[in-house]
Length: 323
Image 1 (cartoon, rainbow, N blue to C red):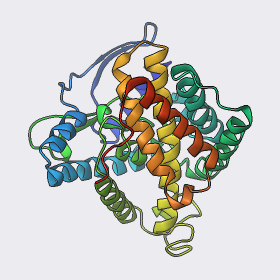
Image 2 (image 1 turned 120 degrees about the vertical axis):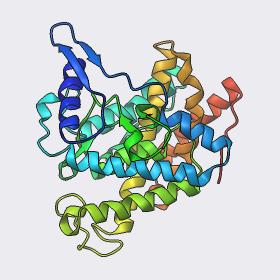
Image 3 (image 1 turned 90 degrees about the horizontal axis):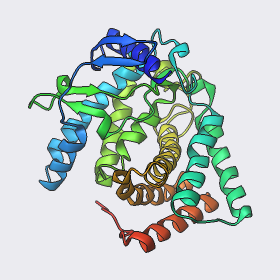
Image 4 (image 1 turned 135 degrees about the vertical axis):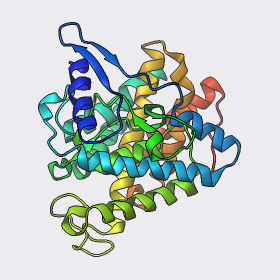
């Protein structure tokens, strides 16, 4: 099923002009695919090098090019998209948000990986707080854009030396579905593989929102019924409204990422992922400090417990970049 999704979604995205690897052959019986070799340079490699060299402008320029591509993929990828191609569900909905993100964090990271056992009452409140957030970000009205759901630096390839738009190629899109566009933005900006300076994250968030409004004027600038023209800056469709959505989706994405790192390292034995638990938790703490999320006390408490456990077990500093 996963190979079938890769074939159909990849074929569709390429037909829509999105740079994805060419698929030469697909055997539906065995699930084997013959796919174009894109080389070995990920956005991750570029970003880590740029951060070491303190090349803020080069890093920002490359990420702006990625955001331009993301917007095209979200819009063009949704045109003619058949949800029958999906292998993990047709859209980003509330059950997925609760089970595969909030629940995944508790089960895979907190309990399985770290061996913590939160008080049942605290865990219950954690899940209720998550359910409230999920109900606001996973509404069907947002499921009108293509959602990659793992749009991060290790799933973006760079080809050539020019570092421009034409050099970017998207991979690992087989979990694609329809969903809120700000989720993939959160995946990229709060990517634990590359801890971008927070000032750059804010800069890129503003850039994305401006570009989205240019691409989708008026009512098409956001989900149906939430157009740019309605509600002003803070109302539905306003810039502040979308920033709130972004921070809520950032929370859910980072819960999912931390859970995935816990599962992959503790259950699958893939220790490569273990060092990225700490950056994910640092990101969660920072995101939870946003005014829109200030009341999520149980989530904050369990994230704090997890971070203390990681620090105690592995000696990883809980302090990350604050730029």
